[in-house]
View: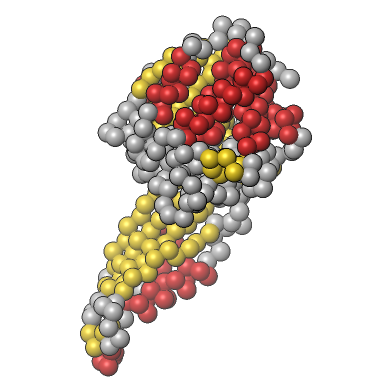
Length: 384
């Protein structure tokens, strides 16, 4: 029988291997193959669902009899390391009781901890009823079109539908275990180009300045109270992200002004309702405009509470902490999975260093996260 020390070594060796691979989107660098090799001896079956340069791997272990299907969803790709690192971003380094490497928080540690927890659970409970799965993509940090959203459609064709899903995104704010994401706001982007007529600033009576019209539009948009929030969601927010106009000269009225802005909205609104209000304001400018919309995510809140109960109980059992449910933050692949799986939660490490130089995680949090995932499996399949 394996000792706790050997288990700890196994976890750290797998994590070091995965972190050492420079898997910048969409290059997987063999991460998924490493997971397949790690899980093969446990009886997992594997389906590769690759498209273009993106690697997608579905792993599944069926138990002895019928039961729930719990899926872990993660990504093996990371953002480019950028500048400002004190160590090699793809050489895992221990310093001050932290493990430093790109992907420690977002989200290779979660991938490894779940794979390790699943393997330990199957070893300890070989007679469990149900199914345990993993879905990994190498295109979460990119445009995502060949990643999870594509893999889901292929799995649907095979009549594969999970009951529960944990997405291993880093969700915690201060301490591991303090936050579970049980939904996300929608994200809606708009690009507006207002056309005027370029000319000399001294002859303004003859010209319509598109920048001034943009100011009217921005003022109108900031005056709207979109909603009061919705069942755990904050009110809809509106933010200008880009404004571009002018030739660079001080004596030329611009011919066009381009605006880009974003709405983060709750289920209190639909994207159609937001678009209608915005386009009414744009129409009121009385000037030629070009308008385009990008609907990058729809809002969702998970259905049911069995997974939330199992995960929350696991966190409390392992850490003594009672997690808070939250819908804050950006988007993740949970937005796709929520339309395929009824109960979807996100849970992973503290997220204070994601996408930053010197990304790192406390060493103690690695085994703790694996323990939480393990106990969640116990709570789902064996019961408390």
